[in-house]
Image (cartoon, rainbow, N blue to C red; front, side, top):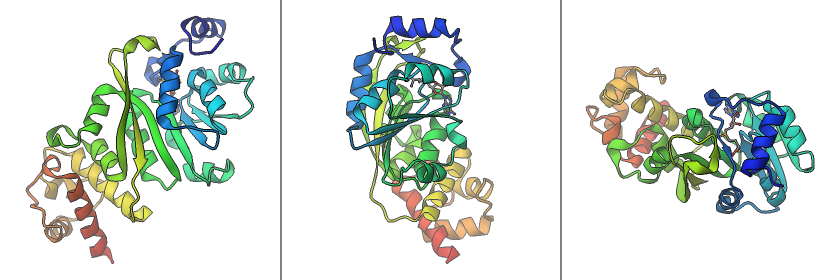
Length: 286
Ligand code: SAM
């Protein structure tokens, strides 16, 4: 019997005495159809290597390993490692790594695990760290072909409707700058154990072809984070008092070169305006 059924999931949890850790966003999928739909939406085939973030007890990992060439599953909870080793023992193309995904150097992983060819990320993300995880994936230089993630519906809707300027934040801007965003499906709370309070949505981010260097992309994301970090402030103030460490004069010059009014706030800018600001800072550094 598949792991992703209510009966098998309950049996595994009681057999190992695993107490679900809310603080780690542990809501496990108990519906095989939803898992099939997520994997189909991610377009995973036998040529793909998949990085799964937070495998839990292996509900989606099991099915991923049947469709993909290889699955690398990164789980932070030490208690789940022996469970995963047992539940997935019948599959020989899964590698389980006990680690916080935010501390994992994807560059290192790329070399060690033969991921140079590129890989797809598929995850039912822990909702408390959705933003830092997606940001880290987009920001780095790992050869990611696509990112298919289940996140809170409300957050997904914001990313999908980047036109609603007032509602967007750093994550919306970063996703839309860097990737084409597509909705895969909406998922009700009833397919999880325990049930979360909110509905979820699966989206796929496919990196856009762009000619930005890694440094330029990092600068772009740092600008976006600082601008939204203090979203009530004008751009002149938010960009000169955040992590970028730029002086007011420097920020004023860059905004002028980008033809953006320094009194505007992050939420008044269009997605492409951020790119112009980044180019202005990068040009000034040359
Ligand atoms: N994939 C499983 C499923 O769909 O049933 C579990 C999904 S559950 C929403 C999120 C999983 O991510 C949990 O197993 C949790 O322990 C793990 N997790 C939480 N924070 C993490 C982190 N920083 N790095 C890696 N895994 C993490």
